[in-house]
Length: 57
Image (cartoon, rainbow, N blue to C red; front, side):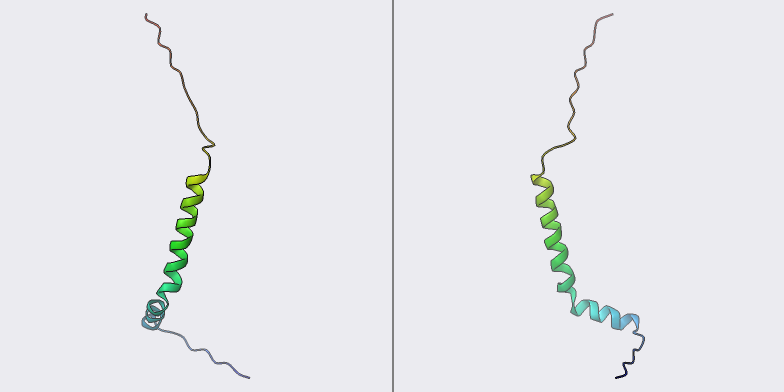
């Protein structure tokens, strides 16, 4: 069984991406929302407080 590959042009590649755009967009949106949710729910780990006392001269 022989398989032959041909080189694709830039136009063909762009058409292919346009046809399959939802296979790219949906995972990106889903992962962005999931990461945003996780980051929002994580506790603040790096938190600091400072008390500055100024004495009169």
